[in-house]
Length: 319
Image (cartoon, rainbow, N blue to C red; front, side, top):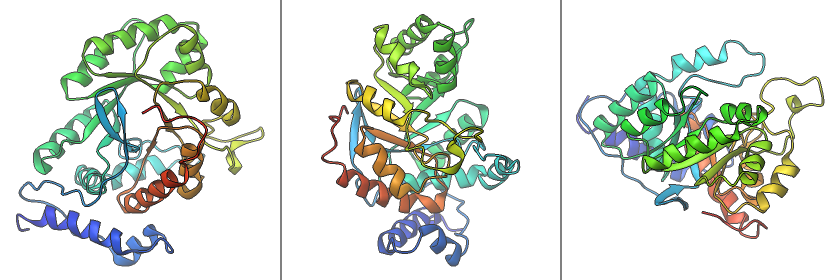
């Protein structure tokens, strides 16, 4: 392959997405077009073809649509379909992850929220080297009662510009009355001179943190309309991540810290057209969304439309 193939790959992706109407799904167009050429060879820097709206997290300028990492890490909330996560691991080779991140950057998305594991560190190092990327990495870190600092330190050492406590950990610590440990982890993140956040699936997480006077730079809180079949009523299936959307909306209305909403599509059960608009209109400052490479262009345009239509939202922009 010639040395310019990476640049050609990105330019073609951008031109194709700019020309394609939203009447037909970008996924359908990608399937009709066939597979993209393999990218290998010399480095090429992604050339952003578009600007995407941004907000601030501390000193950081962050695209309001953030690339999520569950898909590229091979973790899919797939109800009772046991083959989906292994399928994702096979699809998202190191090269495919790099291509997907490059398309995100070419569409104006400058930030990704990714796990902290060996696969992520390896791929990020390759992506930065081969693509010359400066994509901002917000790290999802897990802490334990007996070790509040190791993952945070490791994330910062490998280039994370922000670190937040994993939502499952936030849920567990609040449920067990360990909010003070979340505060200690938060302070340690700040001592590393990076942006510090706290996450939770349960509304009790930001409620408890606000009540305790913790001062994160941002919250991550799940948020969607809960209007999909597996959301209940009981018995329900996997991927119910927002039990109380109205209560979340009301509480976050009074919170003045930036809010990154995640699970906004109910793990793929809600169309982005509805999910993005619901999140932005009802208070989210950013949304984190896991995307396949062939979904990025469509999601970017739908997020742009959602932002334009959410100008009259009741919660002030906090970022």
